[in-house]
Image 1 (cartoon, rainbow, N blue to C red):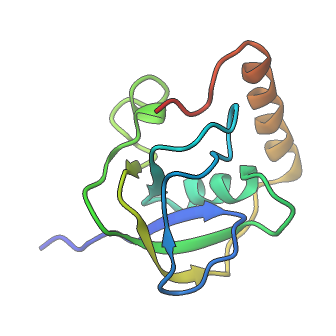
Image 2 (spheres, rainbow, N blue to C red):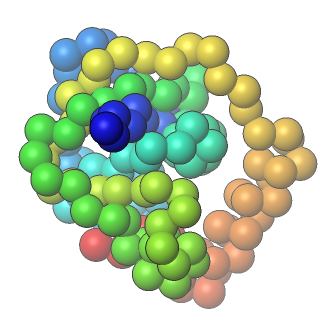
Length: 133
């Protein structure tokens, strides 16, 4: 018998239980074009990266979410970077419903976070988008 995994969404947006996280807003990444998808993950580590790397002045937040429609593997990660989807990263054109907020999580070490931000900046300078829809 398989159980449904807990699904997370990392962000800096302030949401409450029952809110919908929807596509159609500026992406937190790359050139900040309008996002066609919302992103979610079944791993806490990937959600922490989302919370830490999201744009905004507020604190990083991790929400437990429920998809309202079909989800698919996130090709931004699974096609080339992590074949087979070990990060359990997904996307959907349908909204995610906030079921609650996970408040007891640990941030990455500052040097690890800075290395990731430096890498993303290098990619940006090379014209490589982190998110392609």
